[in-house]
Image (cartoon, one colour):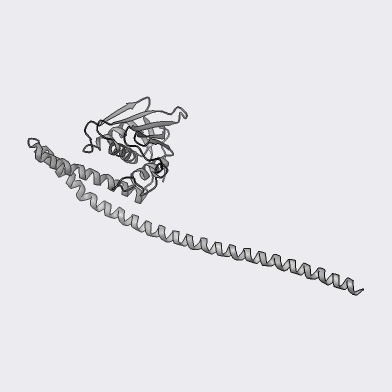
Length: 278
């Protein structure tokens, strides 16, 4: 075999070897990068697991503390109510008792939100009249009234849904308190119950106010836990609303215009065979 042919064969073999080595180097570099990415992903998951473990422990502790606080809080509510009755003839002193009642109700609502958020209880569904739930929630806002602010209600057709009554009451109480807080003097809060036009298996509750509204840059975050536009807000109220609606296989829609008001539409399944979610 001539020398030049042998040289060409050696050159070809060398080129093949060099190309193969180059590809192997590339594959090795990719493999190293993937291993590094996987290690980072594992580390992040470990950090998330640790955060979740701590949050779970904090939630359990918060639930226990909330239960302990609720017992003396109930006693305070009873005594404050008795004081209000006794001081009917002394309006100046009666106001102090009314302030205590209002503070107790505020604390009770806060504790209810904390317990619902921390414990994430199962949803026990039965036939519930939305009208009763709404009226009950409105009655629980006594003490949060503002001068000239009116609450209007409108109930059309069937108001029966499959729901957990206690959780629904907390849901609507949170929405109503939010609206009242956003309203100024002579504001109007309108609550309507009607059948859904798009889905006959759903009933809609519209809660609309002409208050301050929600800034557009905050609208996408209002259901995030611990996010609040209020200076002293906990950020749990609307997070509970979203959680309860989802647990009931419902839907929630919100629209708001800053300075003109906010509208929430809650869609819930109509009454049907009883079932239980855990």
